[in-house]
Amino acid sequence: MFVSGAPGLPNNPSFSPAVPPRFAPSAQACMNIPCICPYMGVSLLLASVWNYAVLQLKRSGEYDRISVMHRQVGSSSGAHSGPGFLPWHREYMKRIEIALRMIDPGISLPYWDSVMDSYLPDPRDSIMFSELFMGETDQAGQLVYGPFAGFRTLEGRPHIVRRLATEGKLLTEANINNLLSQTETQNVLAYTAPQNGCPFRPNFGALEYTHSSVHLWIGGDMKPPSTSANDPIFFLHHCFVDFIWEMWRQTRQNRYSRETAYPPDIGACANSQHFSYAQMRPWDKQNQDGLSNEYTDNLYRYAPRATCSVQNTNCGSPYLFCDTRGSPHCVSKIKPNGLCRGFEDFDACWQGTCVASWCRPGQPIRGRPNAFTSTNCYNDDPCCEAWARDGECAVNPIYMNRYCRRSCRLCNNPTDGRTGESMCRSNLICGCNFTRIPILLSLYR
Image (cartoon, helix red, strand yellow):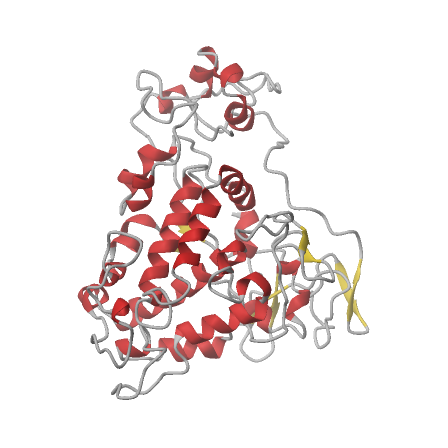
C-alpha cells in the first residue's frame, strides 16, 4: 500500500487524511472543482512529475481498473464508431485525470501534439520516444526502457508492446484545419460506421478516423481498442483529440449549441448506443451529457499549442525547435543517433548536432528529472510546520519527506524564516492546477 494524501488540516482532520481510504468511485463522477477537492488533499505544490503519478496509479490497481472500462467498450458500444466517440472519451479522460489528482492535486493530463513529430523525417526518432518521455522498445517491440518499462498489461504480458510506424500516420496540421473548417455537427460527432440508407455521406476527415490512424502508427497495444489503454500514451493522445474537439466547439458553436447540438438519431447511420439519449455505458450518464460546458468551465482548460515565429524562435521548451521555413512551426527534437535529414541548419538534435543527416550526441542523454530531490531547503506546503509538530514526519513519511523536507529536518536553511502557517490556517483547501499543457512543455512549467 502507498500513502498519497497529506495530513489533515489543523482543527479540521476530516480533510486529506494521512492514510486515505480506498479510491472513492464517487469522486470520478464529479463535475466541479469543489466536489473534487475534498477527495484529493491540500497540497499546494503546483508542479509534479506526471509519470510518477501514473506509476502510483498502476501500483494501486486503479490504472488497470480504468483501463478495463475501455476494454469493455472496445466494440459494440457507444464509445467507438459513431457520434458518441468524442463525448464518451471526454468523460473517460475526466475520470483518469481525477484519479491522478487524488494522488497529486497538482496533476493535470498533458496532451501529446503529435503534429510536432509528424514533421520529422522519421517520427520514431522523436524525443517523445526516448527514455525521457514515453520510453523505447527492444527489437521485439517491448517497452523496456523509460518510465513505463515493466508495465504489466491487462492480459498478463510483462511489457507494453509498440510497433511504431508499421502502419497509420500521425496527425498533421491539415487534419486539424480540416476539422476546424467543418460547419455541420455530424461532420465532427461523425457517423463513422454508416449503413446503406444513411442520408449523410461519410466524412473521412472526421476526428475519429484521423485519431485512429495514430493508434495504428503506435501499433502494438495501442492498435485495438480492447488493449489500447494498456499504454499510457493512450491518454496523452486522447487528451489532444479532446483539445482539437474543444477548439472546434469554441470556434464554431455558441455556448448553447455546444451543449445541445447532437447528430440525429438514425439507425441506418449509427448503432442505437450512439443515440443522444442512450446510456453512456458504463456510467449513469447519457451520450449528450458529454457535451456539457461543465467540463471546461469547472474541471480543466487547455494551454495553447506551442508556437514560434521568425522573430521569436523560442518554442518554450528545450525539447522543441522552430522550423522557420514557410509558416514557422514548432517541431519535436530528435533523439541521439536519430535521422535529421533536412534539418542540418537547425537546432534539431537533443544534446547533439545534425551531421551528415544523423544526430550525433554531444553528451549522453539524461534521465527524467527526479521528483524527489531538491537543491534548496523549503517546505512545499504551508501546513508543514503544524503537521511536523503533530508527528506526521514519522507516521506519514512518504508525503512528508516529499513536501515537508525542512520541517522534517531532512535539510537545513537557517537563513529562511518562512513557515506559511497563516496560509495553512486559512480556508484554502485546494491548490490545484487544472490546465492541460503539451507533454514536451510539462517539465518546465
